[in-house]
Image (cartoon, rainbow, N blue to C red; front, side, top):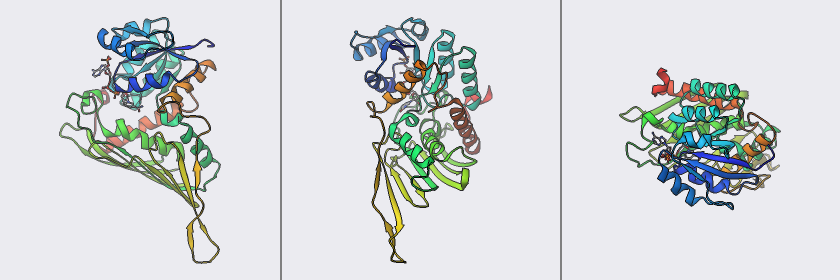
Length: 344
Ligand SMILES: NC(=O)c1ccc[n+]([C@@H]2O[C@H](COP(=O)([O-])OP(=O)(O)OC[C@H]3O[C@@H](n4cnc5c(N)ncnc54)[C@H](OP(=O)(O)O)[C@@H]3O)[C@@H](O)[C@H]2O)c1
């Protein structure tokens, strides 16, 4: 693909607006169309995201969106319980897919989506923007070559109080509600990126009367014996930060799922024999600019992959997404959270 990549946004909800704003900053990409269940919503969205060549086409159904010849890749931004159905729609229309996180509700559904992508020979990536973020990528590469020592302990937490009504997707189990899938996927992904694939995970959770996990905490054991404590909350304001303790010091990452930078503080023997204290701090920054709020970098990665003829991204490979979906299946099994998709 050498032409400007035409994007179609499927579902005009909250994240779709953030994504569209950042997409406008991505070279070689254009917002070609938006599709909503209601024509008025699609039109209102299109009017808010007018590009250099005018507003994107506004479609009053997802079927019309995926049939739009100006659309090369569909960004699926519906609630997670509907991702598989909507990705299928796009693949069957011959489109590539960037699908919001979590890819699906269950590992089995995620495998089905990956199989569909292969069957239709289309590109598929989970919209795990954290894995495409320049600072996270730099930190991961530095850790991999031992720049800051060997990681022994990682902590990451993400949470905000959800005050929505019971029909909101964040609290509606039929749409995939729950802190683990909505927020816990980030600390789990961060640990996976920094430490490798978990060998063992143990979860505990507080469930609502309706059976969704409002608060969840996970301990994990990773390759080489590194340990992680991870949490997600829909009832409280967590720090949203991460830290990685290594045998040489500590890395602190504020807003770890889209950080502006990370800081390594070495703790070294200062030579006095009995005094060990902090050395000079190292600020870790990305090698590329952050595009908008960070959603632009994941869109740029999709554009890069499509131009290179790839069917998956090395930054968010299918195997990684599937491993994380299986981890969330296992934590849900341990804490007793089930979705209708588990019965299928
Ligand atoms: N990457 C991130 O930082 C991030 C942040 C937030 C959310 N997300 C993910 O993005 C997805 C959407 O989240 P959101 O916060 O944007 O949700 P939202 O504001 O509720 O929007 C979801 C949209 O999905 C469409 N939809 C289709 N069928 C629906 C149904 N039965 N019930 C409700 N909505 C339906 C609606 O769009 P139309 O009416 O236009 O068809 C709705 O506006 C979720 O999977 C979430 O995990 C990612």
